[in-house]
Image (cartoon, rainbow, N blue to C red; front, side, top):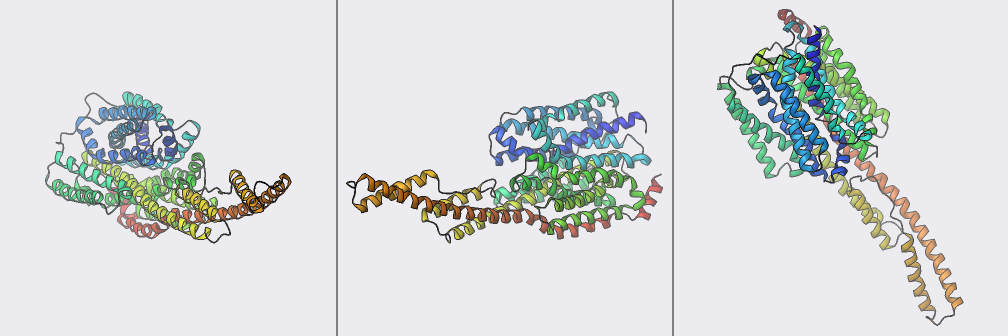
Length: 570
């Protein structure tokens, strides 16, 4: 490849990196953003959702539109829109501004992603496509995997606003290189008409589906709005398939899925995306909320998976012709299965065991992510190539949405049940303690508030305070004086009574506080065990589904068949 070709591919990789990075980089900064803007976590979640939903809805329509208007110009316009969105998000002083900025970012990403993939791939001829596609595919997976780690580091040292501002120099660099390297005058365009009906139906389908997946746990999976959204998405899907079969220039040529390699790539990119994102995005919440780690520490704890992706993805993309797609993808799935099997038996409080799981999962994803885009591109050219990359990008986003929806929903349900159980167990346990009824009531009230809080395992003993102790001394003293004869008692007698009462109350309070402290430690330990089990349960339940999903590898060519395809291509 010439220097100009290498620089062009690098420029496209920057665009892809930015698009995929912003799908995950914000997650770990949510507590800091919540404090900075003084908003609820429920409303803040829409700053995440708007990016995912908009990116998924508009990737294919805008990818198709860029072919009509000229990919190079549209690519630069998308970068500019992403830049404006990043500046608005980083400067936001309200929830509305943050959501607006994220919406602009996602529109820019929906333009940049398919255009950058197509421009990058078409810079080389078909015979030299594999290393380029592998590099761009590696960039996608690595950016999404690095998001939480970079987000934690940036939030810790620069503040949450730099999670968005960090995009600015990269976007400016990409725009500058694009203006220098890309042909902006008289660039080739496609003459096919825009499939308006397909575009509208796909947008309705993806919007209703992603909104249902994102909001299912909050609105209730059996609620009328969620069921209606699923019904709309199903009807839209059927209508879309019918429309695409008869329209002259379909937005998504259904013949794409006639290629085994492409169909396999779509399935693999969704499945591996689900099981990677479930760990890389959801697990840091466990580290911060249950283990009490900082955002930086939580981000660094999941770094082993990112390292394995970084090391193995480029290798797998370059040796796929020697091993064969089926063996490569199957090996990746086996390693991810081993990672989830480790989660099934590990103690999450032992970080060495966590590292083993992360290494397996990162290695497995790296082996699949490297060649998957190469295999998905197949031998497509022109409109088919653009469509294939848009569809792959779309399904990568769907994998992210599914991961968050499935695991967050399961986690939310588990935590709700766990907290109810913990509160009931606490009430039963406290009633067995040798404490005054008022102390029991205060202890249950405090424990219940702690269990319902954001950090349910972070209990503090609700012992009898000095103020309460003083009140008890005074009440007991007045009662003792009244029994002994009342106010006419000599001062010396009253002093003796006070001394005796004070000693008795202090002894009782010390004893009760020791009981309360021991009981609080027991409640904290038990609650934490329940919470840990609630976090780990979705990962354990996912293991058999991952084993079943590994059969996807059978859709890919064996080595001898793949080599024959490569020989025919050359």
